Amino acid sequence: MRVTIIGCGRWGSFLAWYADRQGHCVSLYGREGSRHMRALRETYTNGLVTLPPSVALTDVLPENEDVYLISVDSQSLRDLLRQHAPTLRGKPLMLCMKGLEIGTGERLTCVAADELGTSQPVAVWLGPGHVQEFIRGVPNCMVVDSADETLKIALVDAFSSELIRFYYGRDLIGNEIGAAAKNVIGIAAGVLDGVGLGTLKGALMSRGTREVARLIAALGGNELSAYGLCHLGDYEATVFSPYSHNRRYGECVATGQPYTELAEGYYTVKALMDLEARTGVEMPISRAVYRILYEGVDIHEAIDGLFRRSLKNEF
Image (cartoon, rainbow, N blue to C red; front, side, top):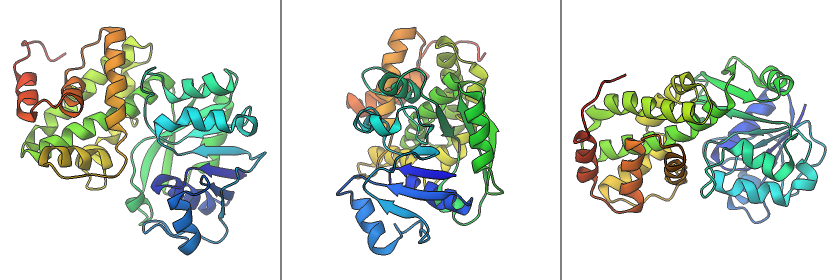
């Protein structure tokens, strides 16, 4: 299979390494002038992943590939699809990132449909796993979902291995919302770590999953998806892992340290507030994270506000 990965950051480079390992003919695309691509061209490594020579590095997007795997930040997706629409329209796409679009609250597959048409074959690759662990041979389970059943089956067949066990998703709405929202929970976990309240992460996981489940149901998805690999199944890799950008970002917010890496949850929480307003679903944890990040509310005040909420049944 001819595979092009769009996006040469940490995860995109891993996808190129992994697809090559599966025997596919792989190209890794980065825009002209990309610092990531420049570094890869010099050494074929980014410090985490070392690419084999069989992976072609390019700043010209190949045409007529069997599938394009996209790994860019979620807020850049619409512009990327618009820019490369002549090449990508009608071609199978797999979105390998987690997020929601600010301003519209749209899921990323909806952004793809907006830009490329509702008949565009598009799938998502979601679930737990860190590059640092995969390249050491530590396996994990992930999920592929798509409204196109044939595409979903073909992609699972093409990318399954002893390193990643894929499950077939059955709820595109729930899986996309759950995957995006888990990054917000990751930021909350980091904040708790930063103020020495890590023991609250158990409650955070339980109530955060319930909060996201309610939103999924209100949007027409299956609330049980929040308890699957896309969300709860990704918590160990997000809420506890030292490799999680979102958890680390939340910790840095709490301790006043700078953080320069991408933390998708920073953008996602803003989109979640739009969805909260649209659906009427209460999202107290997400709102607390939003208030800390965007309104400058004191962290302890935000946590106290969660404890002062009216008493209610757990379920």
